[in-house]
Length: 129
Image (cartoon, rainbow, N blue to C red; front, side, top):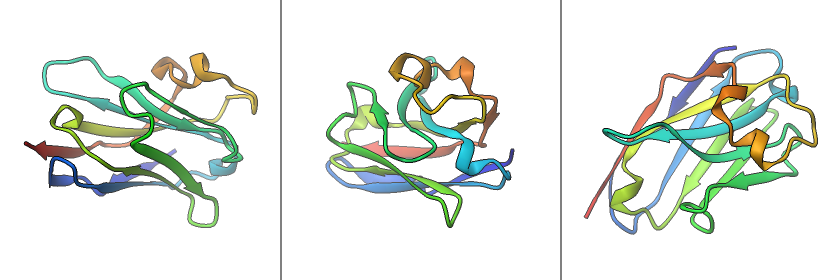
């Protein structure tokens, strides 16, 4: 599966960005899709995930209420709308796909990066104070 992430950039604190991840694989409608991020000097961490039907979403506590994940089956694209950005959101953001997830995969499964077998190249988000 090929994943192409885009939309990163430099934004002031309080601003917004929308990340996109096009899933060029044929299994998009069966894939659990997730966003992860890695800040300088830190481990990669879970941000958000969306079920293959788009009906279930999960968020890390640090972004809940500010970020929204969504997907467009026709465009085979998953989005991450990021509002009220903070300097601590600065990181490289990665999208990922898991074709083996069951529809009822819960938050523990969906937030575990070990379950995702395909990864995009990452897009840098920098939030200035």
